[in-house]
Image 1: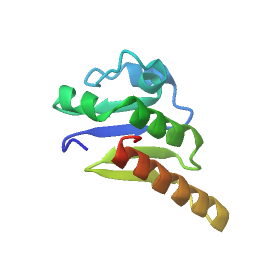
Image 2: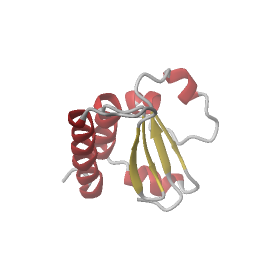
Image 3: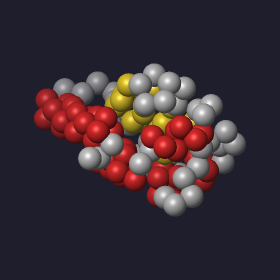
Image 4: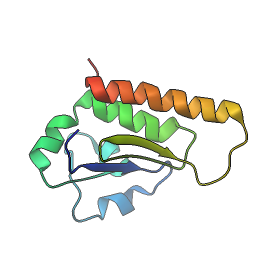
Length: 111
């Protein structure tokens, strides 16, 4: 993961808000990713190299299906954030399973 990169997606986030960010890194060949995930960082070339098609698909799948409010990568860590207290063990287990699966795919690049 490039050191200075952040990526954030919120399920249900209006794509126009993400597209309006001026300092975002765009992926011309992946409109769904561009509309759902805000990617920022200093080295656009290295960041685009990191986001292979398989990594973009894995992260977007997590954003769209994980039972959490925000999914992000920051400081090399994959984070799923919940904005409320959750007492349902099965929801927490699903979130952890989704995060672990995505982390493996993001780490391996989908290979």
